[in-house]
Length: 182
Figure 1 (cartoon, helix red, strand yellow):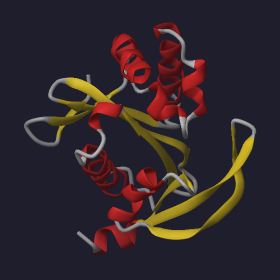
Figure 2: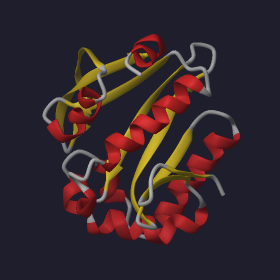
Figure 3: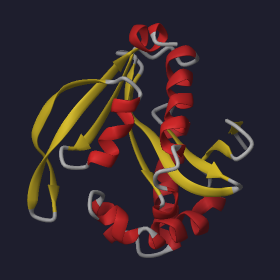
């Protein structure tokens, strides 16, 4: 099992099948909170649905095409960060993330992303990380803004949210920018 301790209470761990029940329970408790911006929550009705998600994550990892980690706080799962759209030929990735409702505002996501970005730039040799967030999702947008990402533009009508299209704000960070701020 991959586990990276950030401090006494906070760690990152590669997602695995044994996380399905706990991860489902976290998403279920956070359903109202997550449902505003993440429509997948409405299709996650049981631990089996979460196992299907984990299967896809592990498949991408096996194909060297992504990495999904659980944010562990005081021994329990607090959220998820996912590297997806990993392009080795262009040395870039984009990420997605979510936190359980009881873990908002503790700085766990920002600190976890910072560790993962160090890993992506310094160990994996990536040159670019992108984060997209719905224009009105100020909490999600705050993470790249706190970490010094550059707002590169607005992607119009980027996602269908319950029959209404929403714009996404595109943030980017380059390896040289990340290393310069260290």
